[in-house]
Structure formats: structure tokens, C-alpha cells
Image (cartoon, rainbow, N blue to C red; front, side, top):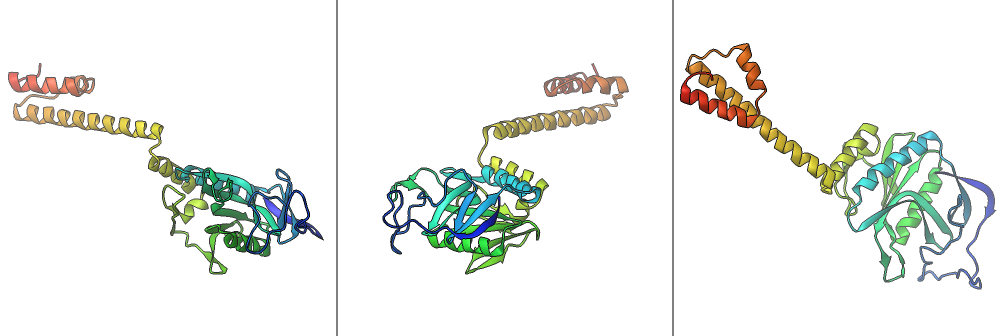
Length: 274
């Protein structure tokens, strides 16, 4: 979604006397599931600023849908993907990224879900200030990688060393949470997205695709064997001065590999076309 400030009013973290939330010290950050906003609403908070995550326009919504489609197929076993997952990144920040991947299950150190390791944000109308502050807060909290897709520029960039570093379109993007390296172009181009999902499912040994692949290979071997036998019959007929009439070729076309093998054996034995 494309967040926009709803007003200049500041939403600050609750005081330490609050029964629901406490104000952690600098060495004791809040739990990632302690909320400053009500889940399932459009509210987010970035460094005390209330942000309203508005419904997306086509440019953002279409790209977000495509991103979920690609990343969802690539999530490695033992990890889980999420859309619009709220994360309490700092005392004064509680917001969601568009798409993220985290380890599945509960972190025994915190008794909460695992922090996301890989986070994606689709940037269309969102301000550079907002997305930059979010990237800073997420990485400070421990998120390993934050990636932004800048829709209007048609670019993908990763937050690194305090700046957005553009990723080359023909380059690849690898991460332990993903089953295969992604080509950056696959995050931008619809046709490439379909190919990326297909390769990801193959990398996961998807049972349906594995069955189809095995069947195609078997059929390919049968077709190759049949073609080889048909060529063998043609050579045998040429050597034995047997005319391969259209009628005889039509008869051969109706035979499977076993039938062609039997026919070749008979031609060799009788030295004529049966």
C-alpha cells in the first residue's frame, strides 16, 4: 500500500506506566509484536509519525501482486512469507513492509515470531524519506536485507551502507531464504515473473512438475526410439531395393516402436516388405 501522512499529529510510544505496553530501554527493545497501532487497520507509525496506509493504485497494487507471486514460489523450506506484516522495529516505529520472508515458527529467545530476514517494499507514491527511515529502522532491529522496487523508475534497489544501492537489471539476487537466485528483471517484468515461478517450482521438486517432466522425458525417449527404427527400416529397404511406397509409409506411421521393431526384423529376415 502507498502510505501517506494523515496529519501532523504525533503518535508517541506509551509511557512505562501503561498496562498494555511498556517503554523499553535502549538495551531492551520492544517485542516485535508489541503494537503502537491496531492490527488490520490502515495505521502505521514511523518514528512517531502516524501514517495511513491507503489502498493502492494500479501501479502499486499490480507490482505488489506480482512480487507476492514470485517470492511466494521461492520461499525456502523452513521459512514463511508474509504480506503487510506489522513489525515493531523501534520504540516509536510500528509498520509493515509489503512482502517479507522470515523463519517459520516461534523464536525461543523472545517467545514471539521470528523477525523477518528479507523485506520488500513497493515504492510508488511513498516518500523517499519514509521508505529510507523504515529501512534504517528495520536493519537496526536486525532485518538482514531490505529491498525496494521503485515503480516509476522501473528500478530495484537494496538498502546497504546507509544508502539505496541500485541492482543491475541483468544481475542476480540470492538469499538463503529463497530456493534459487532471482534475476532482478524477474521482479519487474510480467513474462519473466512466470518463468521465475516455474523455475522455483522445479527447484523445489514440485510433484506435479516432476511427474510431467518425467512423463515428457519418457515420451521423448519413445519418440526418439520410434524415429530411429523408422530410419532403420528406410535404410534396410534401400539396401534391399525394396520400394517404400506411400501406402507402406502410411502403414509405418500407424505403428508404435514395438511394431516398427517387429517390422524391421521381418524385413531383414524375409528381405521383402511384408
